[in-house]
Length: 604
Image (cartoon, rainbow, N blue to C red; front, side):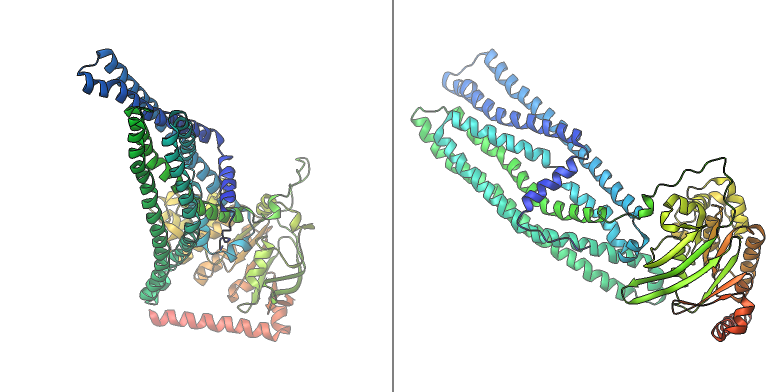
């Protein structure tokens, strides 16, 4: 997602962003501000104490040659006591600010990931994974970064207010020097804030681009290496990284320039303060200790005021990143998440093992004007096995995604046992419908965790047996407790597909959807798996995207799709007899299988 451009209302937007984040965890933030206030009071008090020690202890020691032990003890106690209070304020502020940032970051990250899980599947199809990772990672980190120095910045405001009050009460002429320095610092900070807006926004956007390209490169490592495209992919990644580097350099140049300026302004103020202070001492209007106090205060103000500028510098990144997060959180969730399932009366009979599926005038397009499914209608009775056959791009997988509730139809209705699919909650839909895809995704967890994914474990053994996975899982070093690696990297394609099939079966679905889920398995093993499913899941309604004659032959009925339209619906024998297009496709499947079998023989 491209972040919105930053307008002239950045400061108000920044305050609104900070307010929204602080409201997530106000207590630790309030404690951090309290610690910063203590630190601020102690900072001004330390300058005042230094002046008192100068007048009461140091100057008398030089002028009179001696001071009492009580005076030394009092001066030492004053300085050390204020130092302890100042240190306590620092500890409280830092600890509480760290807790605030960590808790707000955790809350935002959890909200983003939860929204990813609740939004429709179409959202994930249209947003790169790298960009989504950037929202949950880099954007959250950048958004909360401003919270860490923020309590200190509130302490800076207290320091400035107390300093101005003390200077006015002490000497008007010295106060005038401060009144010149402070506005100059404010103006410099405002200019800094406006100058760094554009580079900060560009850097954050480039960071998301780098994450996207990096994720694609790592995820597609097999393709890159197989085609020898390492140099090409490296160059693509290099161009993206160069863009991020240039954006960060621009930010660093602006920051370095203004940090030097913010350091120089208080130092110049001290250069003016010394002759003015000497003049006022010569007039006997103030003491030397007062001048020392003012010089000390100006020196102490250098870092706090510089940090205030740092907060303003971080504000654009925080606003941009928080806006990106909010745009994710504003994506409407799948309405089925908000649907309340009807409470089933335990006295009522349980639903039949198989679901009755009705599809009426179903229409869908991923993009306007590019129809994928056009007025598809059919009915599947409970317990029937239906093969979906068609050429590549005919809409077979899309049809299963719609039936599974992963995509919302543009037109038409899908009903399970007479109920509109849109009226079913996600939990209710998932309890009745399970899907196994051709591309079997496995997590870097154990076999058990990959198959169950929250389902009861009492059906694990049966699911592995029906999916034909029992033997190879038993041969693994730790059996069902073996970790399969990222995306199942330690397993073959056929083994991954069988675990994905077991994952669907363990849920005992009333409607089982198989999207070419055994394509990576050899035909003999596939035949055994499908025969076992037919024998032991006789009550389950099953729909199979099929491209092998043996798979089609096991089906009770066949749906034949062409260019998104349902051309015919009947048994395999009926379609072979009356549909020339279907007959040609089956013959092509048989020839393809014969060629592959021949290749195997030659290879041996």
